[in-house]
Length: 79
Image 1 (cartoon, rainbow, N blue to C red):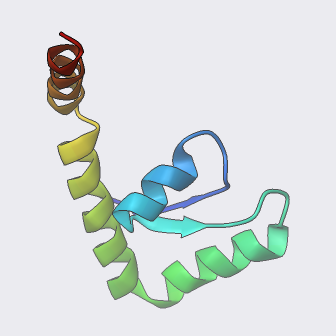
Image 2 (image 1 turned 30 degrees about the vertical axis):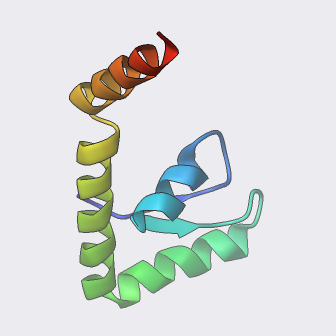
């Protein structure tokens, strides 16, 4: 996977913070975005690690199979 640089939009920040799969730059902060991108470009090893962590998190938590299993559990508890 690839690391992501996101702003605190709907869901993106939560996924990045939970997974360690990238960096969060403040909304409308061009310098912060630039700094985040430079950090990843200056440290390819960090970028690879973040990309891998993000990919593992998404596969485990956000795949269709995972979401379906989570929904089944919600309904099971609601009985």
